[in-house]
Image (tube, rainbow, N blue to C red; front, side, top):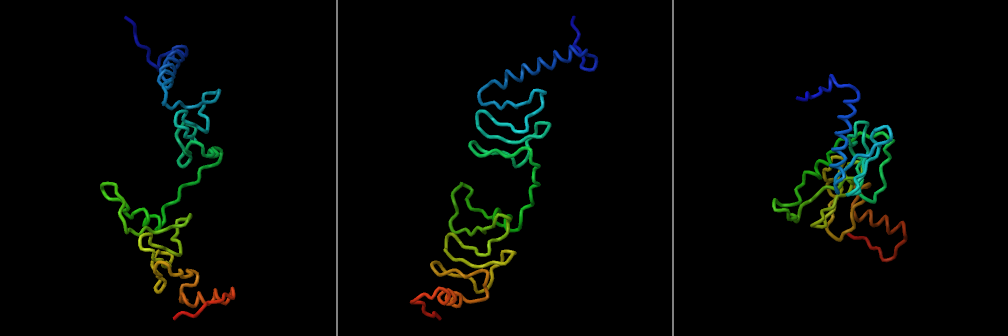
Length: 189
């Protein structure tokens, strides 16, 4: 009767045999088409950048082979510099929460028409001018996304300059006429 060797009492040769046996199993499994196979250097450490041979996606990993958040790139995209430290993911802003909370599709997956979805800039702040895609109305908002009184314009009308929201549209139009000496500019009440 053959006794099983415990990893605690095994000799280094027995441990090496067990490791090689497991590696062979893994290699056999990972030789299948479509299966991701980790890439390692000559010392057996994970390469900082891993790529899936079948999908073309690439990403950065830590020393344990765990994917670093925010580093996955699609096929054909320039790869992320895996030597650069990962930037901590910033918390969502009020605008991003507002935008992401708007339901734009029905339970059946069909688009819901007439829904206003706030627009945020790259830093997650409200764009000063918001426009409703379905109605064509535009207006200025403050930093909290609240509409500034008197800034709403109908479809086709020149939008209010949100840097000067206190002025009326006609005053702003008059400034443009004067600045560029446009002929045919008439005061509009």
